[in-house]
Length: 68
Image (tube, rainbow, N blue to C red; front, side, top):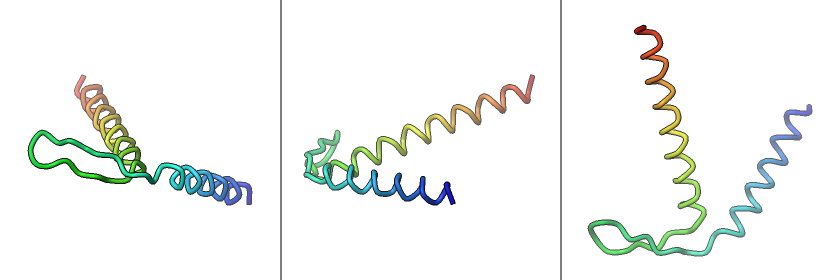
């Protein structure tokens, strides 16, 4: 029951955070025209890329440790 309440509060917090960060920002890529996307997508994309980098580094660490 406690886990459900915790998940509920995390979801509510995320929804409030997302509603506050929904204004559009301009993203300039190396090639092409600039794009306007919501700030919450930039924040979420940064989080996902950081998580993927950490996970990849951890997998490489485990592979190296297993090899030794």
